[in-house]
Image 1 (cartoon, rainbow, N blue to C red):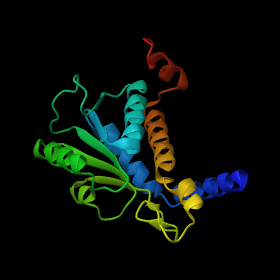
Image 2 (cartoon, one colour):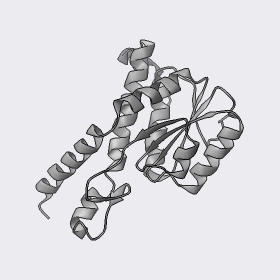
Image 3 (tube, helix red, strand yellow):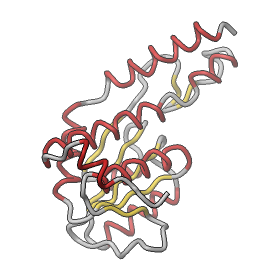
Image 4 (cartoon, one colour):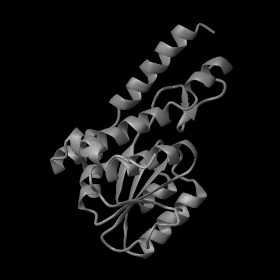
Length: 192
């Protein structure tokens, strides 16, 4: 494998994925987060790691946020939003969390790599990060179209793009709230 060449191909692939994300969907998600009384996040695996970073960022801009599964997470209610990160949009535990949150009157936000997923059908707000290239079978590189080496490089392009989208949502929220980088630094974890 030519590592430099594959790295640049990956950067181009991620750039194209990001360009395909609807700014209207991002703005709608940011507004839903700002409108919520409290923000809850949930995800599994890499998507879970990314969505937890969104929660951390929301806390640093002064929003009330919780990670589903933490012992300190309070009950969810009407006026709250659960934002789920999921490549497939069909992770069983995330479907259950969405159903539970809905049953308590909360809104559902979803950042997803697929169209028309089971969680999307429950969601009030969705940001799609869909790979429409011929290298993709849903949100992961397709076997048989790429070489095994190429699949190793492109297999999970969704996740770094998801993180960039989450960073941008945080930036929009911060700008709308008038939060500065200095404010975020003040709210940064200082027990480390």
